[in-house]
Image 1 (cartoon, rainbow, N blue to C red):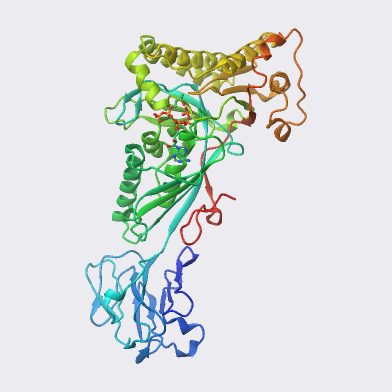
Image 2: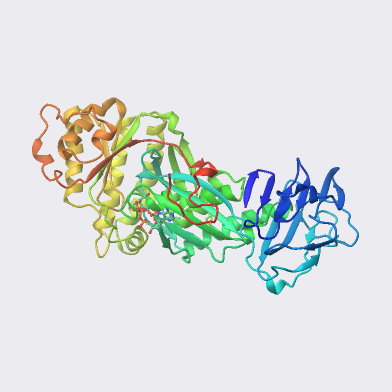
Length: 542
Ligand SMILES: Nc1ncnc2c1ncn2[C@@H]1O[C@H](COP(=O)(O)OP(=O)(O)OP(=O)(O)O)[C@@H](O)[C@H]1O
Ligand SMILES: C[C@@](O)(CCOP(=O)(O)OP(=O)(O)O)CC(=O)O
């Protein structure tokens, strides 16, 4: 099958088997039905029936008018033309779609290899509703000999970014709705360095919903993936109900193929980028008109932090107050262009899968930490306001103070959980000391550390202070991968008076650095770069 343009679809049988079905609608508004020999013997084609749809001519042409000896494998065609007004004697019509779109189903009939058949009266159409019609082109063969169903595959591909919170989400108000106990705020990181790419595809031939993550089948039977599928399908269904010209994608099973270009489940927000790409790619496939904030309501149900990855720049997830979670959504606080000089250095201390997942860790904290209510109800709401102000004013010192204080508060409630949860390790604590020492030597806050549910340090800084921040970090991490590719000119150097002793526990414990900056929200990927081939099989990202 080949999609030759937005409005023209052509379906080919395998070489020499049966016939080719070609559907052109809207601009061309022409349907051709012919055997596989059509290309070789074009003179054999002659029009047999014509009709007008919205003033556009529809022509259906069988290869031969009279008795036809069908070649090799015979096909069954079920061809939908959408519009109204088509008239054929004995026509059978059904609710259809506008003249913009033609969907066709072509199935091979395995057995009728040498059947001699009269195909001259193959058209049966009947009006069912005033709007729309179906043209069924039926060959007079037993359906028991029908083989493969349609293999038509619809797909769309999107990338989505990682976000690293500066005011952390930790605690669920409702585990069912995946709503948080407090609002949170994050910086979206550049997709040049960290990104998920996901192709969402659907087809009448797919038998079940499925996800392949980094080349391996990944479970989607969990309630979170199912909630995302259900919500997105409901939006598509509503669209299809309004515009019957649309192909019924909401009824097809979905296959998702996804790749993260960074460690999965290691405290680097893979679930955020992963579910944002999941939702964005399906929304694109379904051609949904919902805004990123509306889609964030769905992504939130996949993974809370994912709702913030639907935007670039600086993003708040407002916890909301409704019982149904409807207003628990992400909003952009400022686009990346507002403060494009914000950079991040990620020290990858471990990319192993973490011991306690965010999901279970935060539930244990809510259930057992006595410090937690104060954090969720008093500390964070005040910090959210202060952080928005710091971002609006591009006040790095306040941004840094709030970021570091909130990371420490989050890890404090983890330690206060019974049994205690330790996400940071000795190297993480060394990174904190290095940042404190950089700031002390600079005489102001030029760097800010934050840690998610893992040991890796994310250090924010403004580009204007790059040399002092990266110079010290490079000194502490020697020649690990990531430096020369991105910042070859940064030399390891320490500011005057720097206490070198704080570097020792870092050295040897950082496996690589990722140097990145604030970036954009999800992006559409051209069809040619989809992670599936034309048969619907996964293929690696180029
Ligand atoms: N590309 C993806 N598509 C769909 N789901 C994904 C994708 N990447 C990750 N996930 C889901 O997210 C899970 C990992 O989430 P988890 O919260 O444990 O780690 P993390 O997001 O990397 O870390 P953190 O949230 O603490 O920063 C994976 O097991 C998988 O279910
Ligand atoms: C520490 C965090 O990164 C926690 C992220 O938790 P998740 O969003 O992964 O949790 P679930 O909603 O259960 O999937 C802080 C943050 O990103 O705000």
